[in-house]
Structures are given as structure tokens and as C-alpha cells.
Image 1 (cartoon, rainbow, N blue to C red):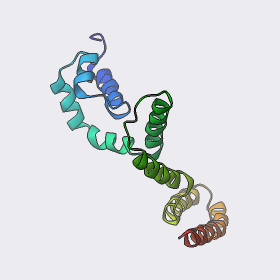
Image 2: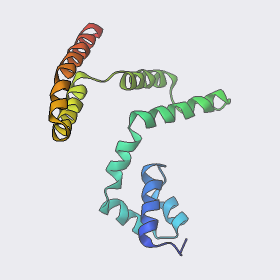
Image 3: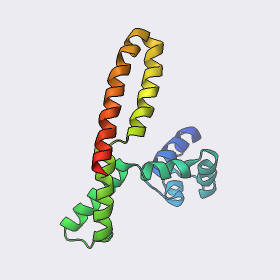
Length: 145
């Protein structure tokens, strides 16, 4: 690993820490750098916050739960409480199956602003459809409560 530049090592370390959940010690050993160097990289480039965001993303939680399910199916003892697993799974289904009206409005606003820069006439034509969809979503949300 010593023939790789420090910049490249930092990029690899960043992926290992954020995406794979590797510890600073494991990264340091793998990349042949000191733990202090990894710690400095983490602090200077805000890895802890980015790791937290990545690990709590719905797709990542689902990946962890599927891995746990596979372990249990293979006869290993569960590391996660079954009741907690059911509750988490219900939340994940809610997150992946439904998008709130507020999120839709935010995305439509961003899209409409972008489209207005591209093709103003086309952007105007979308507004009525966006309004109809938002009303549809609002009706769905109010009927499910």
C-alpha cells in the first residue's frame, strides 16, 4: 500500500469508514497509515456525520435487516430483537412505499425551478399536473390517518 498516494489512501479510507463501517484502527492497518492520520482525515472531512447519514438511510437499514434475516435463516442466533425487527421493518416499509406530500412539494418546486430555466413553456404546462398530484397525495395521506 505504500506506493499509493496519500490522497488516494484518504479516498479509500473514506469509503471504508463511511460505506463499509470500518474502524479507524482497521483502516490504518489496511492502508499502512497511523490511526492519528485516519482520525485527522475523519475530523477534517466530517466523516462521522456522513457515516451517520449513510448508515441511517432507508436502503442501508433494509440491507442490514436482510443480512440479519439471512443469518437467522442459516441457523445463527439473532443479534436483533424480533419485536424490534418487526417495528423497524414496518418503518422501513413506510419509508420506502410512501412519500409525504411535503417531500413531493419540495421536489416539484426544485424541478419546476430547473425546468423554468430549461423550457419555461413546458414548466408552466407541468404546474397543473403537479397541483393535481399533490391533491391526490394529500387525499391519500388524510384517508390513511
